Image 1: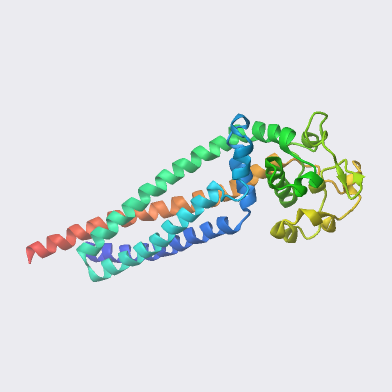
Image 2 (image 1 turned 120 degrees about the horizontal axis):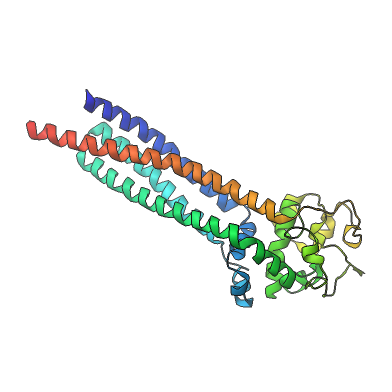
Length: 296
């Protein structure tokens, strides 16, 4: 009776495990197709401003962010979890001690990797909390260029950073780290650079202005035609414009990170619980099957 219950529970749990594997694949794809530029900015902000030089910035021009790279790894493990769950169902139904032993070992390995990944993600999130604010403030003051200079020379390391900030500001409808003054302050690179845009001097960063069709702009990232998306074309030249995004980006960026982190944590915990149950049930069935065969 107990053996039949174990078999039934293992089959049911593995069906859920199959769904969990599909959920991991889904979350990974969600991260991969989402804003890679945003993740690059977050990763850059955890490096510490003293460790960021021109070479570091240029490496972010075409590279894949660490979080997205991790998502690809998780995607592979999600697909493996799906296949492992299928094997577990087959092993339980056929009562194959060999299949169940392989299954238990494979699930254990996946579980260990997931725990290691969870610890790494926790460390990375803690790093973000302590390093992101001062690093972004310093980078924005010393590296952020007016739009006219950022689009005219994309081989400039400062232009690479500016592009990441522009993406974040448009995407989250924010301006500066805490406020626009982080960019427009007296001693910033932006203030002390040539700010001629369409023949006039801008007094507001263009990406701090409210936009139409943001998704289209972010998809193409054609910053040379950004004025086509401005709700108010005079916004960059008027510091009192009502079309300026007043809220800083730091809090919004933190919320953005937490949104992805929460999804990954919830899915990870649920999958981990099912994996532990699966290993225990599989080992119990293997022991029972071998015991019955010895008594035959």
